[in-house]
Image (cartoon, rainbow, N blue to C red; front, side, top):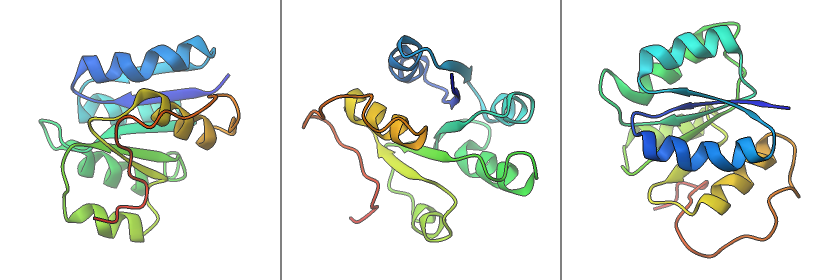
Length: 140
C-alpha cells in the first residue's frame, strides 16, 4: 500500500483524487493549506505528493521549495495540479522538480493513470479516457 498526500484547498478536487486511490487500497492524506501540507509531508513521508499550485497562504511554490530543501522530503515525487499557466512552472519542469503537471479541469481516469504510473502500478488504471486535459509536457 502506497501513501499519497494531496495538498489542495478545494475539498472537491481532494475527493475526486482520493476516492479511486482509496479504492485501490492506497493510504491518502489530505492537507487543505500549504502549512499543513509541509507538516504532513515531513511527518507522513508519502510516496507521492499531489500539489495544487495556486492556494491561499503561499501556494504550491512555497510548498515545493520547502520540500526540496529538506533532506527527508527532497526526493518525494510531486505532481503539480493547476488551472493556471504560471511562467515559473516552465523553469520548475526544466529543473526536474516535478514528475508531472496536471491541468484543471482534468479527466480523473487520466490523472489516476499518471498517479499509478508514478507509484509503480502502470497497468492498474485500465484504459484511458479522451475527456479532460492533462499536460505533462508543458508545451503551450
